[in-house]
Image 1 (cartoon, helix red, strand yellow):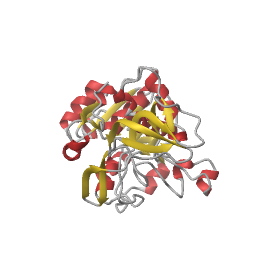
Image 2: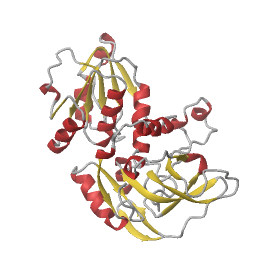
Image 3: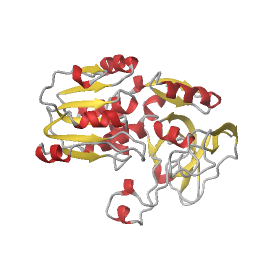
Image 4: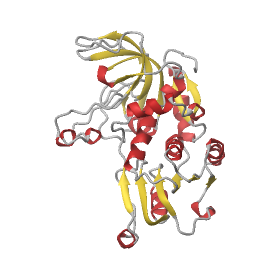
Length: 335
């Protein structure tokens, strides 16, 4: 089979690899599409400590089950599935107290084992979620990032009618905008430095979008501020935009070596809640259900490229043009 292979940081090729064989409790998925995300970029650059090389990356994947290993009763061959890439150990302290997304023996498809930038991939059967009929490949390939947004939403207090400020109008920021709106946000304001993204955010449902939060008439601040960038200037600015008694959600992934400055006194005096959201936690099926119920995220997919165009996908991602980029290893057409 053809696959993207990262031999080490910066050492990337598209090459022939052995077809996977399903082990006990595993299924083989023929990949229809797999999304490129910031985590993949960290893997390519050697900036993700948990990644193991050589590695076939890609963790936002969907496709059809084509083979079952021993001790697997379902899903059946031919079933369309989306794959939850996270594989908690079930034995560490975090897993035993019900926080599998914080597993201390972290393993994941596309990070510590072969992923979805390949024609085929073997995954634990329990990670393969059956998709409803009629769901497009574009939507199916967005289940994993949407499940992250759903977990972020679940970390927030649910108070309909609040005003939200989101830093970052990339795919994840736009998904957060969609789910907080679904949950009853009164308004969603978005900040980004990319004018094309700001224009798209307005067409996608943001009430207002600008290059700086000073453009918004919200003198008392916002009840909820969400960082979906990981950029220190955005985080520091956002912390100062939370109204008294409000909440700041750190959703974007920052460089582990970077520090953000904030006023502990302001957190105390204004009773600001600062919350983190890490990956997926009991949110994969709810993400599928949201899409099946009509949440339309298909416009977020701007590019569907072949595996041999992986370099183009990476360049497009780094340039900040387009939105979500999907790789279609078998040349599947966008549904």
